[in-house]
Image 1 (cartoon, helix red, strand yellow):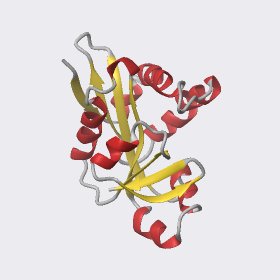
Image 2 (tube, rainbow, N blue to C red):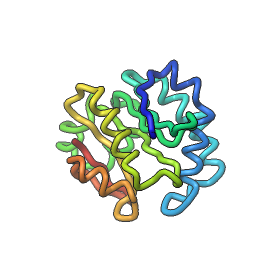
Image 3 (cartoon, one colour):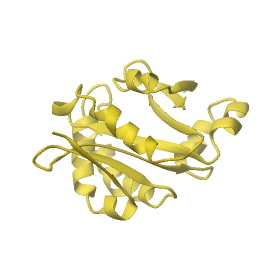
Image 4 (cartoon, rainbow, N blue to C red):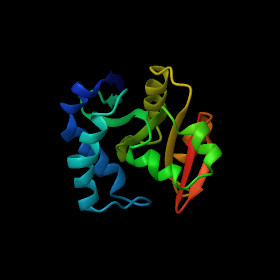
Length: 171
């Protein structure tokens, strides 16, 4: 059986090595094919920075042996943060005002390849969103090639921006 937990930033910091392992396993393959340097940057720069954002929460999934098999996390997104400013510069100003001011940003969702197609991603995202009372939730994924896109759409996320190879969705 898979068990889930919700962690705050302090507890999430304690499992950084496990998060990095899942991130590597999930995103070093197609369609993402992130480089070793990009994965290292996530572990040493991006994830530690995300831990410091207001409202950080991490949903985890562990197998019967206690091994981490997936995670999903987010935080309050605001101007002055990389992703919010990046998206704001690429979408219509009316959409920016509606979606990108104090939204809950779902930053990452990753599931070990051996555990995919078992509903774990859905369960992780549901756990995270159910714990939140935010009015606006936003995320970004690859356009058509993302295996997560059907999951997000099935949960009610709808596109409000598209640029380069990405689609930005909100709920």
